[in-house]
Image (tube, rainbow, N blue to C red; front, side):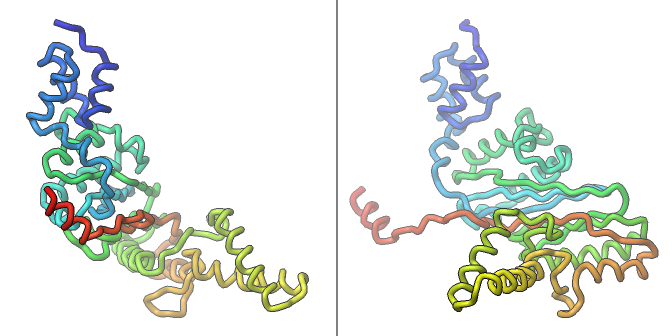
Length: 308
C-alpha cells in the first residue's frame, strides 16, 4: 500500500474542500490515487464544499456563549436565511460559540480548535456541513471578553434560536458587587450597544485612521464655508467632540433615558451593586456587516434555465 503523506492529504483537501480525516480515509481507500480519492469523496458527498466555496455567504447566525466570567460571540455565515433556521445549523453555531470560549475568541485559533464530539476541527466541521446542507458556509469572526471578577452579560437582538440571532452583544463589567444588579445593568448596556453601534469603548480606543478620516471630512466642510484656517481648527475640534459623543460607548447618551451618559450610568450603578463597577469592554457582531452581497439577476437566471 502506498504511503499516505501529510502533503497528499493537504493537497486533496485543497482540491475538494473535504475534512482532513476524510481526505486521509479517501487516500487509504484508493491506495494513494488522488483522482480516485476525489471520486470516493464525491460519492460520499464530502467534496461538495469546494463547489460551494465561491458563493457569497452573507446570511447565517451570530451567537454567544458565556461561562462564569468569560464570554464569546461568533458569526457563522450561510448563503440563505433558510439555512439559518435549520436546527442542525443552529446547534453547530452554538457549539462553535462554546468552543470560542476555550480560545478567548481568537478566530484563527477557533478554526483550528477541536469541534466538540468529533474527530475534526471547527473549520473541517463547517466544511462537512457545507457538503450535507448544500450551501456555502464560513466562520467569519469571533470575539472573546472576560473579567477577573464581575460579569460578562450577553444579549441577542432579533433572536432566531436560543443564544443566536441577527445581532449579538457582550458587555464586560468588572465589580465585586451584587450579581443580580450586574446582570440587570449588563442587559441594559448590551441593549444600548445593539441600538447605538459604538465604535470603541473610550476615545483612546478609537482607530486612529477613523479619527483622521473624520478630521479630514470636518476640515473640508469647514473650508467650504470660507472660514480662515485658525477658525477651521477650532470648528474641527468642536465637531470632533460631537463625533466622540456619537461613536464612543462611554460618551454616548443612554438610549434608555435619552439624557445620561453611559459613563455616568456605570458610575451610578455602584449604589445598587454595592461596589464600584467598571465597564471594561464590549463586543457587537451584526450578521453580514460589511459583506458585499451579490445582486441576483433574476431575468438572466431564468434565461439560463430555459437554455438548459
